[in-house]
Length: 256
Image 1: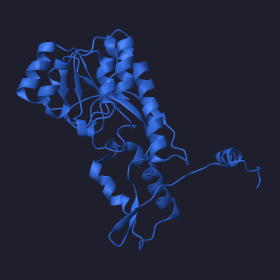
Image 2 (image 1 turned 60 degrees about the vertical axis):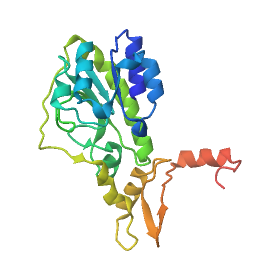
Image 3 (image 1 turned 30 degrees about the vertical axis):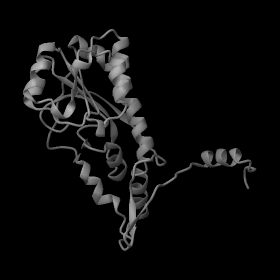
Image 4 (image 1 turned 180 degrees about the vertical axis):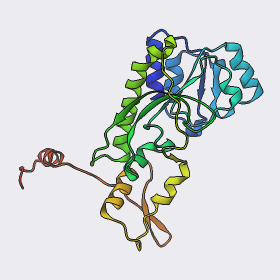
């Protein structure tokens, strides 16, 4: 999503003066983002080191007007937040205040919380800043963690494109969040649902929701233990129409 937004901003004629990208171990589409941005290599910063004095000084010298965070994996310090006069806009794949933090696509399926995307201002909290715009995304019964993620990603890009002109003109609304409402999850929270206890009782709905929420190849997801070995599980969900299409693609006669 970050790559798509960088490309779109360049097509709008925006001047991107700097980039902060994840370290190599956490980076996806890093080369594409850098190449699309047109940013000088000296103005590309390690996102994990933004609050270092030399980085703060280098960014301040560039005199940026506004910051944009797209699926950014770090909390910005007050020193970084104060660098830009118009603040930072964050694109979060959840319908805030539900599912602040990590894996919104998983928790909307497992907990049944509303899914969607939100553009909001960043503060020092975890997805707690003032809301600019939101769009709800339907969670279908045949969605997996992967398919819902893709839907949220597309919706986030579309919402950003629709909202950016208002943000750019300074006309975007700001609606404060109720910090005591909604839900919040950390990365490690999925560990408590990933291991399927073969001796525990689950409802069918609960187990199916865990399995489909954690189906996102090639990432590992739900599993059960067999001795010292983990047996990983992925769930395939097919509607009647998809099953017919699969049979036809395999040369089977519908109704067989």
